[in-house]
Length: 62
Image (tube, one colour):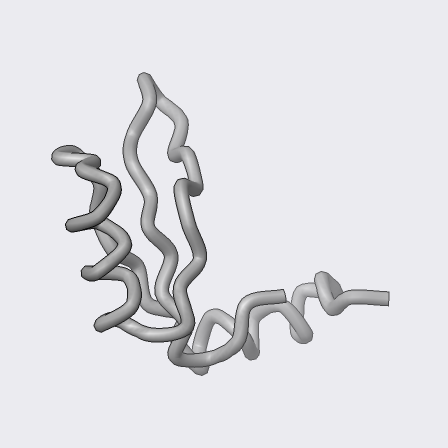
């Protein structure tokens, strides 16, 4: 499971979202983007709300 503060690097592919990379923080995600050249990618930070929703909705890792 992603941790609070980690950052997903994602891009839209048709109607889906593709995970390209999971970085430890925003700086690492931005560096990864520069090195790998995905011009249509965007960053999504893992928030406390999202991490909490996993437990509430029963998606916690077994």
